[in-house]
Structures are given as C-alpha cells and as structure tokens.
Image (cartoon, rainbow, N blue to C red; front, side, top):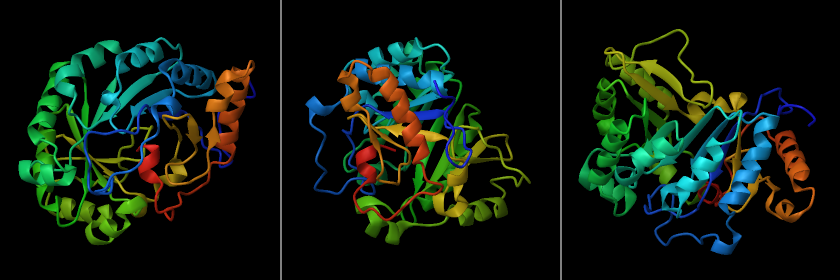
Length: 325
C-alpha cells in the first residue's frame, strides 16, 4: 500500500458512491429523456461479489464511507446481500443509500437490519398530480409511505432530496421546510445541473440556490449563521430553522463546492470516475479476472485520484444519466 488516497490538490478522498444499476422505475423529466436511454446489458453489470471485492480493496487505502445509488438500487434483485457483505468490512464507518423511496415501505426495516446507516430519499413535490408529472407516472403516496416506514424502522435521520425547479416546485419550499418540524427529517434543496439531455430544461427551470437562501432568511424560515454546518462527507451546507430543524442547500453554481470534494464514483459496470461531471475514468472490470487483481485495483484507485480535477466540467451533453448521482 502506497498510502491513503489523497489527490493532487491535497484533498482526502474517503467517500465512494457505488451505482448498482442504471435502471429506475421513474422517468423524471430533468434526468431521462421521454424516449428513454439505452441500458447497460445485464451481462456487463458487476456481480455483488465483484462489487464487494472492489469496496474491500478500497477501504484499507482510505475509503471510509460508501453510498449505494442507481438508477434505483432497490430494483436490483437480492440487494440486501450486497449490503450485508459490505457491512462485514472492517474499517468502513458508514453505509448509506440513495433511493426514490418506492421500495421503502417493503424494505426499510430489512435495510436497517442489513447495515444501512443513512437514507437519502428523492422527493421533488408534495403535490400528487405534480409529482406524477415530474416522475412521469410515480405515485406520491408510495414515497410518503416509504418515508414513514423508514422512520418507523429506526433510522436516526432521513434526508429528503429536492431538485429545486423554477416554475415547478419553487412554490412548495415552505411545505418542504415544514417537514423538518419532525427532528428526524432533514430536507435538502439541490440546484439543477446544466447537464445531459436536461440542458434545455435547465434553461427553463434553473434558479440559483443562493437566491433561495436569501429569500428564506428574509422570510424567517432559515436562520443566518456566520459559518453554516457541513456534515463532512458531502457538498451540502446546512442552516437551522427557527424550530431547530435543519435545511441543506447543494448548489454547484451557487457554492462552487468542488474544492472540498472527497469522493469517487463506481458505476454498475465497473468504471471508476473521479467526478460525476467529467468523462475520465479508470476501468476496473478487466482487473477482476487477473491473478494480481487486488493489487491492480488498488493501483487503479490511486490513478483515479491522480486524474481527479479541481473543478467539474458541465459541457458533456449526454453523460450524467449514465453514471448515477
């Protein structure tokens, strides 16, 4: 082992996001074009054993947190098996999951028992009709049932992720913030990224979160603090509400948070990306069938960290919906 993962800009890289599938049961208009996108063939998807092996190699060289993503990870058959395998890795401090919430009513308790520590649930409207329109067919009731099931399952905190969309859900901001009156719910507004097929949508629905922050503080819904809270593992900047809740703002263009980035991303077909927004990657899949594969995988992590850029690129027109958020 050469040493712990540290990039050319002296950032400690300790967070690995792992996409287990590129498939999703939503077709959110800002993420996937109406005609759909080509999926990765099943025979190219990493097995759970292969994914586990990669994570197991990564932990001793510095990865302390793993987040499973998709697509929608709960669509993957026997997903709990991978969680249990990952939980067995010594030195891994936290395992989290990002989900659209549809499968949580059925699976929240088992997820907790299998080893998931934290949940992020995507929820872009509290209006049933609007939610169905945004997701092209999703049912709000199912997601809200999933949120309640997660709280009942004993998760200490459930984070609600909201893509902030001008002219669509910007009139629901107060309703979202009121969710934090439950002290175990944190809401996080995320700036729409000008990326992928959503670029034209971005021009229509983008709004800077720094303007939303100013508005919320003027309305007394957020309290100004000289130094906002950061959880140490992501780009969100947290602000308190008057009743002691917590609201996160994640804005690439508002905040330019790249300078503190601490993550790598592993796609479901074995590509290791230093950045969600840049095309460069290191392919780990061919290394899995080589006798000295673990050593080569370790070297590949150091290579990915070495090519990690200081800032994201937002120019590629097709990339983001293939890598997983």
